[in-house]
Structure formats: structure tokens, C-alpha cells
Length: 387
Image (tube, rainbow, N blue to C red; front, side, top):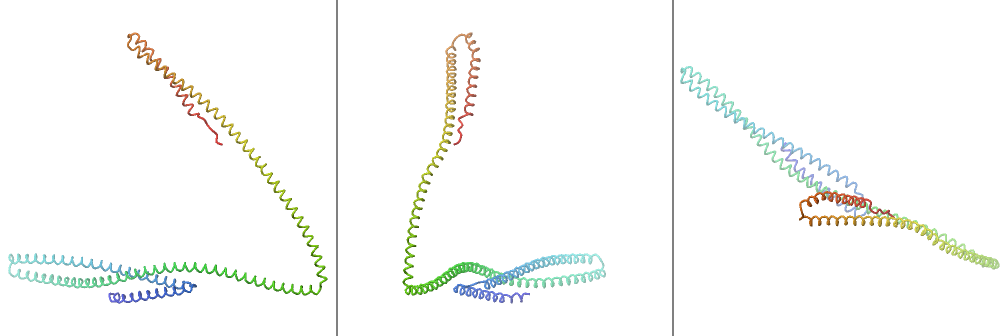
């Protein structure tokens, strides 16, 4: 696995170089075609899309490799945990062997020598078995550790290689993306130029058709010229016929003069009609002005009515304000009288105190009526109709 991955890196660089050369070749071909002005970049765009698909496929492969490396790292972590657990179990076995040795010593001190020898032999056998098992497990763990370390080193190397390839492919992807955008922009420019050239070609076609038409007219004129020449030759041979034609032409000229006079009369009649129409237009405008005048009179009458209402309301408000002022003056007079008679006897004070509630009630009623009238005036207000 490691050897194939290490050998795949130069292949990837070769494909990168080939793709770069192909991209440069595409750009050169596109530049040559744009110089000619009649380029269609469908083939180059298809090749570039194929290169982009290949780059995406390789990027997916790199992602898969990274996933495999992550799995290998997880396996290595598990192996490290296993080695740690084996070391822990080895420590436990060593502690158990020490306990058995202490038991053996205790047994050798307490029991007989024959039984002690037998127990010692059994314990030695168990010790050798445990040591053999521990050695085997340690050897396996060391082998696994070496293998895992080697795999980790290989995985790190492949990871470095794949990261480099990933960076290269990312750079290539960015360059291809930029080239793709440039090609699209150039393609749009070429399409615009092609539309302009098509419009120019259409203009040239129209000019060609006009030229053909002019040439046909020229041929017709030449034919007419030849016909006229033949007619002139025939007319020179026949002078009498020309005289008759001159007389007929004079008659036609007279008829044309008469037609001219008739046309002048028609023009004068038309001018008179236009003048009459122009005179009739102001009359129509006067009618419209009369309509507007009636509408204005209606609006002014409405305004006059509203102004009358406003004046009536103002007069009512002034009367109410006068009443309010008179009530205030009466209240002041009452207060002054109260202040002046404040130093008199208790009997007269008691009388004044009897009259005070009546005065307060009267002033309160007057104020309430004034306030209600003011509220009605404010709520009614002058209402104007819109024009």
C-alpha cells in the first residue's frame, strides 16, 4: 500500500504538468482563433470541462486517502491502548508472582521440607509459566508496537504526500477556474463580435441588393436611351409629324394652364375655408368660457354663502364673549363687595355667607352655558366646499 502511494506522487505531478501544458495549449489555440476573429471555443471548453472533472475525481480520491489515514490513526490509537493495558496486566502478573513467592516462603517455614520442596517446585513451575506467558505477550506487544510505528511513519509520509498533492490540485483547480472564467468572458466577447459582424454582413448584403437594383435601373435607362435615340432618328425623318406633335403639345400646355388656374381657385377657396374655420374656433372657445363662467358663478355663490355663515358665527361668538366678560365683571364686583364688607358685623357676615352659594351657583351656570356654546361653535365651524 505504501509503495503504491509513494509511486503515485510522480504520476500525479506528471498529470499536473500534462494538464498545465494542455491548458497552455488551449489558451494558445484560443488566442490564435480570436486573432482570426471567427473562433468557436466549444472543443476547448469541452476539454477544459473534462480536465475539471478529472481534477474533481482526483480530489475525491485524495479525500478517500485522508479518510483511510484517519482510520489508520484510530487503529494506532487502539493499539497504543492495548499496549498500555498489556503493560498494566504485566505489572499485575509481577505483583501476583511476588505474592506467590511470599506465600511460598511462608509455606516453606511452616510445613515440612518434603512438602515445601514440592510446593516450591510447583511454584517454580507456575512462575516459569507466568514468566513465559509474560515474555510472549511482551514480545507480541513489541512486535505490534513496531508494526504500528512503521505503519504510522508510512501513514505520515503518505499524508504529507497527499497534502502536497491536494495543495497542487487546489492550485490547479483555481488556475483552471480562472482560465474557465477568462474563456467564458472571451467567448461572450467573441459572440458580441460575431453579432456585430453578422449585422455588418447584413448591411453589406443590403448594399449588394441596392447595387444590383441600381445596375438593373442603369440597364433600363440604357435601354430607354437607345429607344429615345431611335425615336429621335425617326422624328428627324418625319418633320411634319413633329409639327403636329408641337400643336398637340401647345394644346396640352393650354389645358395645363387652365388646370393651373383651376388649382389656384381651389387653393384660394381652401384658404377661405381655413380662415372661416379659424374664425369659428374662437366662438367655440367663447362657449367653453361661458360654461366655465357659469361654474365660477356657482362656486362664488357658494363662497358667499359660506362667508355669510362665518360672519354669523363670528357675531354669535362676539356676543358670547361679551356675555362672558360681563359675567366676569359681575364676579369681580361681587368679590370687591365681599372684600369691602368683610370687616362688618357677624350678622351681616352671616347674611353674606348665605348669599355666597347662590352667587357661586349663578356664576357656575353662566360659565357652563358659555362653555357649551363655545364647544358647539368650535365643532360646527365654517365648512367650505372644494372647488
